[in-house]
Length: 539
Picture (cartoon, rainbow, N blue to C red):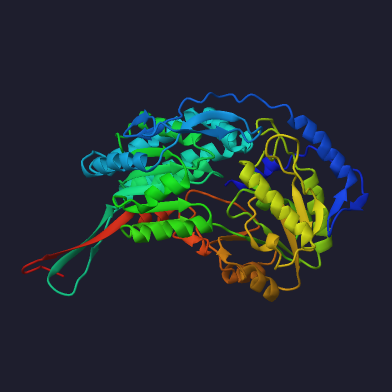
């Protein structure tokens, strides 16, 4: 994800602390009085919100190329995380609406032009779509920030450009998907066909709505499939705008259908639908299990899952501490900590541990938190009240379990879902904050003695999504990259998400890979065709 560009955005400081006086409040809980005053000053600034430079144009379902109300007529509010106030009422899709979308997608696949047009023609539509994304960059970014709470600079300079990049990548793949001719034992001509799988159901999360949309729609469309996509109920707006642009680019009706709604209704209807051939889901591991069960109990549809993580970020004894602190800070706090692969277990070698903790604390204290539409802001609000309360609960768990609270630990301001950047030291592996996916701005710092120890501890997790390694020693890097049981290892970098790089997890972090060439197989069937031949000139 253009790590250096992101890091430069995240390096700006808004506050500094001059006090070194601490008071004890509760088991293991340290409060810096100077820091508390700084947070108080910042909280006052949060009371003034900036008017977003965008209007909501679409709040209906997108089915068969048209924006329509839900069958029930129901709507639900999507909220501004800065204030908790309603942005817009959005059509609430449920089982009947999913059925309508599937009918449209099935007709578009069985009878429509999309899978029958040349791959080159499909690629031209996807390339035009990428051009339209760039044309509407600022509008899309503003809508994403308003609905999600992430910094506008992150949306506009990183995520929307990545949206266009991913679609261009898969547009380039569209006319390069082909089968093979293979030798057989005997007088036969043997070939394989790579065919689109059919109607794909896709369920995307709220933390990166547009990027997750591109990871799923891009390969599905390049392979010639049709799609029913459900947005997260917290962030439905940007996908609807992008859906309009897809049709402006020339996408035939019914190829992409977008249903906003809730998991137990619309999401479950997709996972269990008998006329959906494949489902892809990004979200929590617990919900992933439900998706897998529903898919198996219905028509045994193919499933890919990108699920939770508790990724280790390992700082070795030879590390440049200042650089390690900055990268570990980015690895955890990026996107308000709402990142499945966040470096949420920061393992630091005992030789540099104390220095690292002090500098990590200072960096968290100086993190720029505020209205995400304000220039220079690094951290906006959490996405909603449920996530907000969950994070605060984990912070209380950390204090009660005996970890040392070095910075943060509370809400910020009196409205919205802002949380102080929080740092814990003296964290033990059996604490909840070291085991569970917090999904928030809470850094846990653990101490280790040697590589054997940290490998065993890093792998002692039900998750296996990603890991970070910070070292100057090539042998150390080589050993760790092979020993860590995860789907991605970033060495002296983090969150590098090029369109070409596959992403997915080991263990309970998921099934399958997204992005890169590997994701194409998620949306293709392989058919073997064997033809008898008489008197072949050669075999």
